[in-house]
Image (tube, rainbow, N blue to C red; front, side):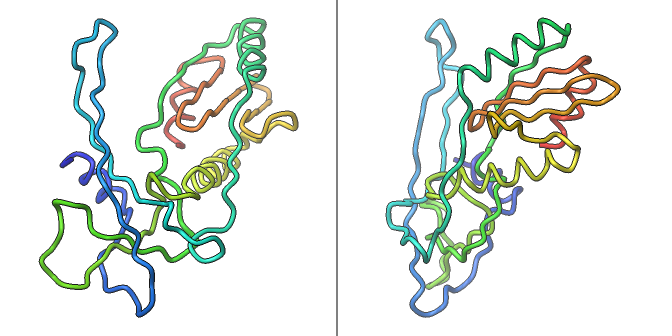
Length: 198
């Protein structure tokens, strides 16, 4: 739980304040999971702070929700192109993915259970998306596609989560499925540079 709170604070997910009169303050809760190794032994204990997004109101607390996800055929296409062109392929998980998206709406959330200040009326004004918000996936897609566009890695016409860059150095492909990413490029150095953008 301490690690999750540290990640939230380091990411600037919220700021504490007094909500305006009439503002709805979303509840939140902790979700616990035991991550295991392939042999069944405990790798680590994980705690995630989750907003109770079911209490959000359409048109007030959220607008657009849609976020595309990749197709299996796109993954097969990436692997086929990588094999044909001799590209290196690297698959990885983007940590705290939903904490990267920036919110357009003003959303207030109760303080995390167990980490409350003793000041009455204080709540967290969310600056970034958080797990459980209905628009969290959409916010992450917007942020990720904007960062990719800055380095000319553009969505393909057939799959909006298959990002492609073709230049004199060759082809770079990045396929995104929520918080999992697969990148194919000529060298590990190029792959590492793309990972730093995220």
